[in-house]
Length: 191
Image (cartoon, rainbow, N blue to C red; front, top):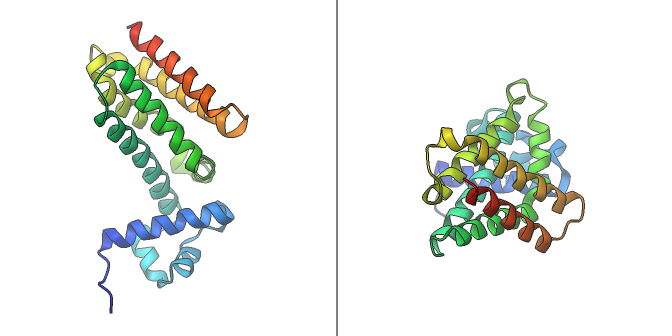
């Protein structure tokens, strides 16, 4: 008999399986019941972990965001601390995540925005990423997060828009990478 999963291990497993459901069948197919069936667990287990479909979708989008930032932080930690290397790590890591799971992420965000409590979701995501970019770029910026907030919002907006163009409009990965690198370096150097 195998070792019983911890609550956190089970949650991670359920999120991975929820992601598979979204990849295969879209967000419409993702419910706590379909997740329980797909994962081969009882329905109370999925309800215990997430409580509602809304909470499951929220946990999914947050796990995507955390993975993007963790990938960026890991890439930054592995390279020299120059501005160029930092920006290169941000751009490559973000684009790699977008290519890997961007369409599912956008579908999850769209599904969540149907719930009243998530009408400001895009603003929350912008704040989350801007705060993370500030921490990553802090050695190259002067002033506080609040003083750099507009610039950080602009960086996130640029990354988000160019990433969308890669996913939906056929902009090549290489062109996006080059353009983002130039734009972010120009913005940060102008401060």
